[in-house]
Each structure stands twice: as structure tokens, then as C-alpha cells.
Image 1: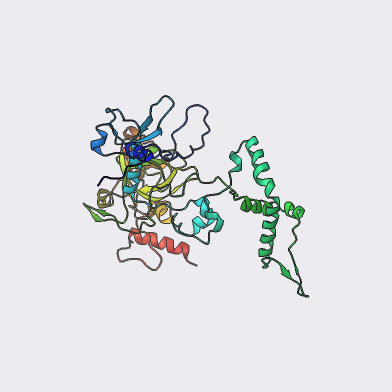
Image 2: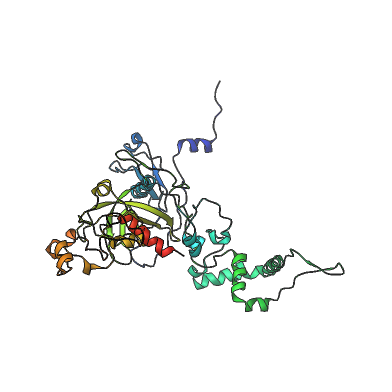
Length: 435
């Protein structure tokens, strides 16, 4: 039995290749008139093809790709130009960044601008995929209206004349409904004789209250009240996990409390050092004045392990990540010695600052003048110059602590007259927090 003949349009679709691709995202804002900096997030979809098809140049597109192209992924900027050729480039950078982030396995949290600075400092920040009804409009990231600060003058005039002015009556009804709801009456207020009267709105009095008037206008036009709106979703499609409540397993050392990622120091200047972790420029929030025993000043080639703390996507689509130095297995087994070691407490806290005051607890926060290459000369006769000598920063040792070896608490002295270093720190914290 002969099959039914297909229509000419169906035959063309069956024999043709890709003729359309998803529309690219709008490019990010840039303040440069000449050379444009790379976009912080991908704007064109990355495509790939099987190996057997790539070697023949067949990527499923309208035209074949040259055989000398060796990359496995690419992004097509122009599928068919006027000159009848296709423009494309490699997309390995975006694809590898995505794979690295999946290996880091760090969930994205809400930006401090979404949940508020005070709320972010007083309670843990939720995931970008968690519903937060208490945040209300503060968590809103997508608006129907435009961002007025980015609009040119002529475009703003057209927006006011065509979009805002025709909705004047609708805005008055919106204000009446809002004021009635604020009074506990949704449509009308009942009078004593059973009659109803509508809530009257005085626009002149409303304009006098600038903050209230601007809030109503922003809600009516659905435009951001303050700050720049998000260019992408708060997750940016990087990761879809909600929590990091799992224990990473190391093949050599077994279960570990956190995952460590190798990284390099990119900038050690104030206010916070910047390290490169997984293709992302992360901020080193803790232990920012740490001087390692084997670290050479200004050497970016040395690789250290860092523990990612949190990450979020900024309003411009950039990945903002905070990390802290990780304690390696060798450093943890080194024990107390003349060199600088890491304490188990969180850096920057009261416990970490006390590490430099109690014997054998490592670094201090007093600055460069208290460090020297010869610990006996520095701590014994006090004649160290504090410049590190000819050995550089790689031979620095911690100076003698301010307190003596016998650090006791009244009424709780041990038999040998000495106390453990950790117990001494706990006693100090207890005395500071005692009511």
C-alpha cells in the first residue's frame, strides 16, 4: 500500500536543517564607548553535536562548519547574514564554568538587596527557590514596567504620554482601593443609616506625602522602588539545589565537614583579598591577613584550598561568592610549632582574635611591626626590625604573646599552675558574656 504523499511544506521541513534558534538575551549594560568588556553571563545559547557529526562539520545548522573547528561547543551569533555565511564562536568558557560550579555544588542564596541588609544579618538567608512570604515585595526580582533611570529623555516622554497618562482614571481607582483596604474597608464604608459612601481620594494631599505617593506609583506601574532590577533570574540557571546540608566525601581522608576547592590569590590589597576559585573571582572574607609559611609575596601561581561559604547573583548578573581558607590535612596534623597555623575558630570572631594572645595559637592582628624572621631575636631581646629580613615573608614567625604561659582563672587553677590554651580562650569569652 502506497504511503500518502506529503505536502510540499512538510517535505521541506523534513529535508531542511535548523532554521531558527532562541533569541539572545539583551546584552548587559556597559559604560564603555569603545571596547566592550565580556558579559558576566552568557547571552547566546551554547549548542553541541555528536562526535561523529562534528568531524564532518555537520552541527545540524543551515550550513556546515569548517572541519578545522575542534571545540566541542559553540554559540551561533548570526545564523544567516546578508552575505550568506554564519558567524559563530567557541562556547567552552561558559560550559566549563557551568561544570566547575556543579563540582563546587554550592547553592545560591538570595541577594542581600532582595531580603534586606538587616534581615540578612540577623537570620540565615534562604535559597532563591524557597518561597518567602514574609519578604513580600522585597524579594520581587522581575517587573513589568521599565527601569526609569536607564531610559533616555525622549523614550521617557513617550512612555509617559502613551503608557502612563491614559491610565489616570485607573490609577485613581487603584488608590481608592488601596486606601479602603488600609482602613479595613474594601469597597465602601457603611454609615449609620445603612447608606454607603465611597472613600474619597484627595490627590493634592497624596502628592504632599512623597514617600507614600511614590510607593503607590511604583506598585501601580510595577516598576522597582529602589535599586536596579535583576537582569536574570536570581539563580541565573547555574544550580538548582536548595541546600548544602550534605557531607562531602574525600577519597583519601573520608567524610569532611565542608568541600575544599583549589584557588589562587588574585589581589591581596584592601579592603578584602580576591581569589580565583573555579573561574570565579571570590572575596576572601576571613583570615584576610594570613601569612602562610610557604607563601611568597605577590606569587599568584601558588594554589591553596578554600572553602566556599555562600554565593548569590548580583543585579548585573555577576556571581558574588565568599570563601574562607581551608585547613589541609597536613596543616591540621602539624600541631603547634614556631610557624603560623590555623585555629579551629572562625576568623574575624572574638575567638580568632584571641588566638594571637594565648600561647601557641598562631597569628596576631597587630600589623607588620610585630613580625620578624628570627623569632628568638624578635621575642627575646626585642631588637627585631620587623621587616622580615632578606628571607621575605616566607620565613615570618608569630611573636611572643602578650600574656604569660600561666593563664589561669581565679579559683580554677590546675595542679601544675597552667591551663590549656582552649580553656583559656573559653574563660575569656565566658567573662565577656557574663551578665
